[in-house]
Image 1: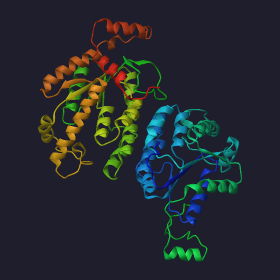
Image 2: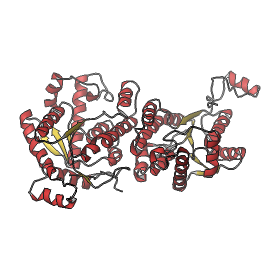
Image 3: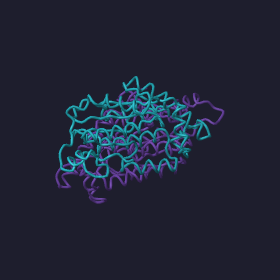
Image 4: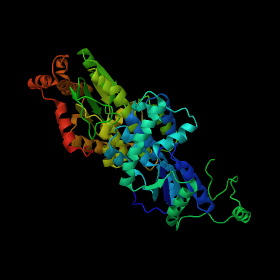
Length: 250
Length: 271
């Protein structure tokens, strides 16, 4: 990963298995940053408008073998790096990413793709200022997911790996493998380990404390009558489509 | 026999040591006569009794439609585009080429990873990154490069499709003069192909000659690679025995050079 670019922006990312609470925490951080006047750009895994359709097609028709799964996700990621993440960092904003290269490293490695090759493949990625790993016991994250009685999707449950013919059992084994792979990544790439069993508010406080020192010199959206009005009224302007940044979807 | 050897690492889900078929790749820039010669070779091989699969770029079920869409509208950065191509290439390797080789067919690949690497390299993508990307590619039995100059390309291109947007490098070259773009782009591309040919030990064939002359040369080179296929062992015979048998007749395998040079000269990661 590249950290030689000297970009004025800051990149914060969250990682963790499904049900670890990472998106909840990133969402709270997003809102806080906006309330502090920072310009925030948000990027989500698997969301490139150019590649999304192919991923969807591959998943729906179950065309994705481990290598095509890996390459298609790399294409999606590359597209977002070049069209969203990099330009925003060049402009000097805060960029938040829900899942980053480590998701690909973990998911592809458990499918048998060479770790060494993955590292080289993703060498174009920008190294985050801070990466948070939400560490949660497997049983706890499973409970959070299964409480909603979801219909597990084929790849989401790791059914392509033929771990079990029962989707729920497959999902549990798959998440366990991913979690094991994350453990290795936390050490190798110095991810900040967050205890996801702590209260939500404690976790958020810790995140903010860690993020704060990285924010000096980052672009803020300051001014505009609307913002003055909002400040005077102690409101965030949640329903106004004006800067400093759009709020994340609810 | 195609040895199951990869430039960098063996992709997950691929088992075995060798396959009964042969993988023969023809690389060249557009207009060098690539498709003509693939068609002629296919017909000749089929006459000889070989089952042949011919395959080209951008034809996979998975990524084919996506690439067409992406090239049509959005501005695509070169890394994303090349990852798209790589997904497409892998899909064809896994779902068309490998099964055909497993079934004992001769696979004629109209372009392989080298075209993708050359095109990306002239557009400024790191050659090293591109070669590392394709570390999952199967090493072919034979890579033929049809060598030609821009001067010979011009009349051929003008009499067929004309100057294509991508083949004139108009997506990245400045200026609006199509003729000049074409000449400049093709010169860059040919230089890149020649570098790759040297680095990976392609069998270079002079494509400035007549179609008939080129075809005859291709036949003799391809013959050296497909000969011995019928000796592929039945269930009872061992692979070791076949290796001995296929090479004891003194046939020079044109592919051996390509494969060996590739292995020693490739920058792809070894794991």
